[in-house]
Image (cartoon, rainbow, N blue to C red; front, side, top):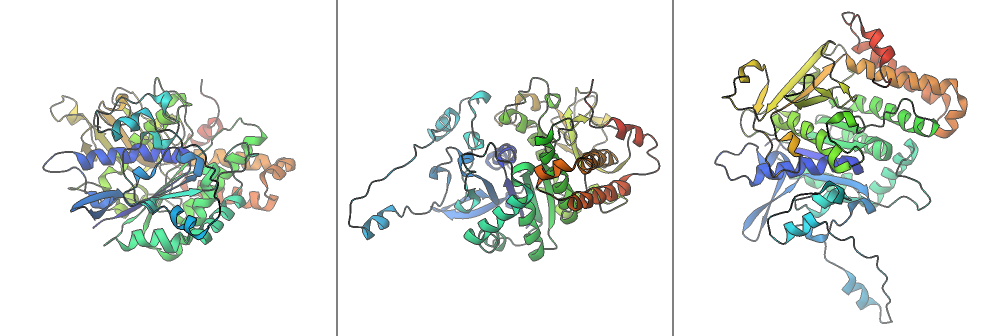
Length: 467
């Protein structure tokens, strides 16, 4: 067996993850003699009513209100309602007050009625659960208490995130409970695939993974943090940028490979509604699904750790950062979803794995592509947008452009050090920021290669608005 444990933490990461898992469900339910993927890599098997049920080997973390209408009907083995037992212990009068349940989306209603599911209207999607098509094990769902009403958003300081994990793990015994039980079901686990939101769950996830690493140091770890890159932002956004930089630096220390994801941009795809989490998450989800698919294939697969090391093995350092890029075959240049820039093919590439999907072997251009993996395209019933049902190209690449990425964060850190008043907003002292800047510069200097003669010029322009 080649089992992978999946983690998702934060609202946008769960939007990405829902698209990802809907696609896995497509592979699982496809009626073919030779399935494309090995279900045991990502799914748990559970005997039920004389048959086998499959649920994702997944832990979902989010604030409680972000789960939306995720009802008990989405759980194969829900906890028993203990309200009857509680009432039996009290002989007096009970007055119950309950918040009205969140109504299901029209899409979920059509699925639950066993009818042909209606097309998803992006503007109708409120929560990531509104388009979830899978049943989950009850231990998959890990809701955390909502932020106080006076809090303007879900952003947490680094210390708040660490404290949130410590409290949650103490109350729920996460590492000794759900995590241990999922791993004990595995014959030979390969590693962990982790999606996380930097601003809300970055510190929470890093603290979790650090503790996990102490117990499972040999398992491969792929970290995909969704970042908040706004270089021209004011003081209120500097907190998020520095937190992004801190998460990137700390994840690179414990991960086999870290692949940062930039915030949604209109440049991601034509016709995309940037403020629609459903649409923007589907674009990057399609490429994450594609570049990691070789680790889930039933035949001709790549072992998870070998695959991640293949991308970074030629790096001149331990700064294990890669980029995910791609687009449809009509695009002249792939788009880099780690920087929200066009993928710069002129820079050095230390390792790379390309996936081409949906281009038939009979196509006259098929032989023109030197590709690691040729795979089928997405199903037309997938929640991945129709624009990505056409032949597409996806790439996981370690490149010297990571040095550009790091230098942009360094410049912001140096700006903070020159403006002491900002430190109060960050909740950090100058020594902490200085140490972060030094660590990022060290990572930067080991990725830069003398052959990248134009790197300095590119660094000077990186982070500026494109014209």
